[in-house]
Structures are given as C-alpha cells and as structure tokens.
Length: 202
Image 1 (cartoon, helix red, strand yellow):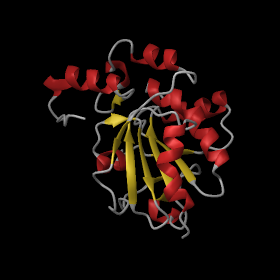
Image 2: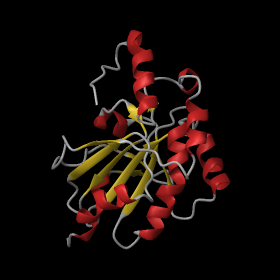
Image 3: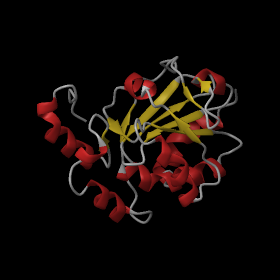
C-alpha cells in the first residue's frame, strides 16, 4: 500500500481514491468531504460481498500506545486495562460507510470469541458523539460497546490516515498486525489471521 502524506490538503483526491480502493474512509476529512459514492459503495458491499482491507505487520511487537479514550460510561481508560487477553481495537466513525458495513461482523466476532478475545469499537467521531448511542440502538449490537475517542488519540497514534483501522494486540499488549480498511470479520481470512494469537496461552 503506497504511503500517502495526509497533511497536504492538496493531495486529498489521491487519498480519497486510495481509501475507496481498500474499502476505507479518509479520516482527515470531515464527513461532508468524503468522496461522492463512498457511502453507496459501502452499502452495496453488504454482508454478502466481504470487504478486504490491507494487512500491515510493520508494527508487530510494538507496545500498545499509552493514550486515553472513554469507556461507555464516559470514564477515562487506556489499552493497558485490557491486558491478559488478546484485544482487537477497531477505529470507526458513524459517517464512515465501510466502518458501518463491517460493524455487524465485529459484533458477531465478539460473540463468537468472547472467551478468547476482547473487541473494542472506538468511535473517532469528533463532533457527532450524540449520534453514537442511537446508532448502536438502531443496529441492535449485542456484544459491542460504544467506546469513544473524541480527541482522536488512538487515531493519531496509529497514523494510518484512514478508517476503519483495526489493530490486534496479544495478551501482553503487543501489536500483532493491523488491518487498514474494511474487513469481513466473519470470513476465513480474518479467522486465519487471528487464530495463532487467540490460541496462545497467556
């Protein structure tokens, strides 16, 4: 996957096209500035047409960032609180079409692997926090909780530039890999990528 410097606003069209190619959203742009058709592309994908993100193992072995975000009760928390079991951290936003498409598969994954894996869906909505609870209620998620990161601390730490970005940590809080772009978390590819980590003891 080519490296794109998102700080240059003049390069936004290139970033937008790259994001669409991986089933992702340009996280540097407000919702209203996402490329035309992004939401429709995501909706058309649906559960019967698996999204396929880009696997990145360049950060393998790196400790989880020591930054804070909010739990569903509004209390400050860090990833260190979840050590002891593998953790899958998913960065998403209500306005990101591919994020919305993959969320039901994350909910199913959380149910299926509840004894071996913690799934954290952390919203990167900066100005639309009031939309998160209604979104969860509408979708009827049974196994996901609405964590929030209004300051985008995790997003800035990961520096992928797009959403969704999903990072797998082992039980010791070390990164295993990250998936940049949408993913079908019910698919065989996702299961194969996670199995070694989930099968490890301690």
